[in-house]
Amino acid sequence: MVVERDEKWVPQFPSNPSRRFGPSSSTPTGRNGGGGSVTPSSPNSSYDEAVSALCITNRCSPKSVFSLVSNLSKFKKQIVRDMGFGGILEIPCISKLNLKLSAWLLSKLDSEESCLIFGPGRRIYVHEDDVGIVLGIPNGDIDVSTTSVTKEQLELLRFSIGLASTDPRSIKGIEYVLEKHLDDQSSSQQIDGFKVAFVVFIIGHLLAPCVKHDQVHLDFWGALKNHAALERYNWCRYVYGHVLEAAQKV
Image (cartoon, rainbow, N blue to C red; front, side, top):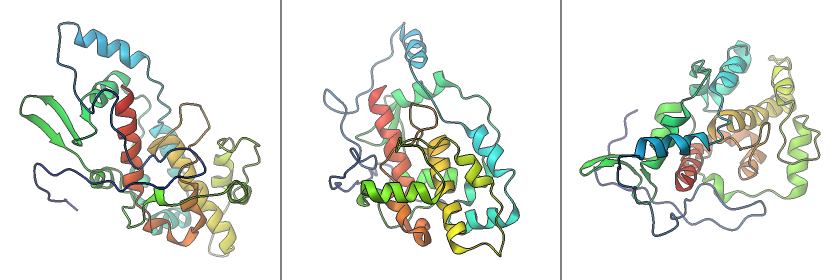
């Protein structure tokens, strides 16, 4: 579905309540020094951007997601579609990402005006809905940032999907959970465990990966407490918020 909007449209992000685990990722903050200004081009700009790209750590792995979803059974794929994440099943096998291009695009993203600025009069306005159009993930009416999770609830969620590490950010071994057999005779508890594990996996490997390998952020687990309503959350805003935060650091 194509979303029509005015050329000067700028998204409004609600303020977020404080949460137990770190700052919100759905609501961007301004850049240091007065907002999302773009550095003018210079003779050395290409070199500077290349150096900047070398300093970027990118754990985004479309290939890992492709490898997982391509081996899912028809039953599991239907669960993913019912959750609203059907677009993830169409992720192509991209084995290598262009970090230089990624850094350059992030450097052009003005987080305050929510647009890519390529020069005078050359702007492309972007919105959280664009994330849904490209990735095919839910754009529901519940903001992920409004959810919260206690330490005890987080431990229970992790235990329910077989994550035994004492590090609450670790997702090592989650592929094993997703590879377990499921069919129409499986219990609701087993199916719910698959749903939670799938969302954790795609966030950790594609949508909003951490800097460290096999780790995830803790700012979305509150949304996983309601297994039956995962499609009602605005995962597009969550992902877009992380993109804006990354742009502020370039």
